[in-house]
Amino acid sequence: MGRHTGAPRGGEPADECPGAVLERERWSRTRVGLGEPGVRFDWEAAFGRTARRVVDLGCGNGLYLIQSGYARPDTDHLGVELVPPAVRMGSLRAGQRGLTNVKFAWGDASDFICERVEPGSLDEAHLYHPQPYYDRAKILKRQLSPRTLLAIWLALRAGGLFVFQTDNPEYAHYAKENAGQLFEWRPRKGPWEDAPDGRTQRERVARFQGLEIFRVEAARLPLEEHEARRRVAGMMEPDFDANKKGFEGRSPRGGGSGRRGPRRRA
Image (cartoon, rainbow, N blue to C red):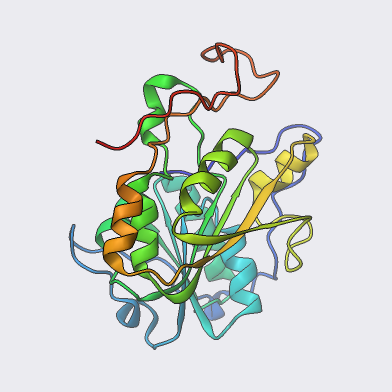
């Protein structure tokens, strides 16, 4: 699933990338394939070492990955994105800056976390501004669901971090109510210290538009797997009404908060 990019328009923040472009002979290769469906992704083969592992699920043009790759050279970063132009731009930028600890892969990020990650192998999983899909005919495409929440919990090592961010209040509410059953939900106030202007282009645009940003760092709860699965079985599917006040041209809210009548998993 792609990130809600919020591409800049007139007067909005420029899509700036940290670091300087190096001489061509110092560029690095930053594209990797995910391999055959159902096969676990081989981090050591992709990065040529064993290190801490961070995945950005629906990484867009990779702004966060490049920022973090500079700041944490001892950590390997993988971005998975379904939009080809975003993958090309992110991998080009990282390669031009000679980053060897940042890689980009084309593919569905939800399928990746659910089917291609070894349990207990990740240190961090990041999900920034997933598409809220205002059209009710598309809401089952929403990235954060009971299936992906369980997959993230399984993929993280003990004490691993799930980092979530959105500018949609209904998405934030859904995440808290459901992800909070598997993770210690720790909302953050104010910008990230490592990226005061924003970790993603969508965050920068949303702030320019005056939208509230919901930022969370959530530590994996030390649950037995059977208990985690029991909790997931009772979670709500993400069929909430994502419309924001003042949003036009989409399905009507129909009154109320948009949190009415959640559909639980069958």
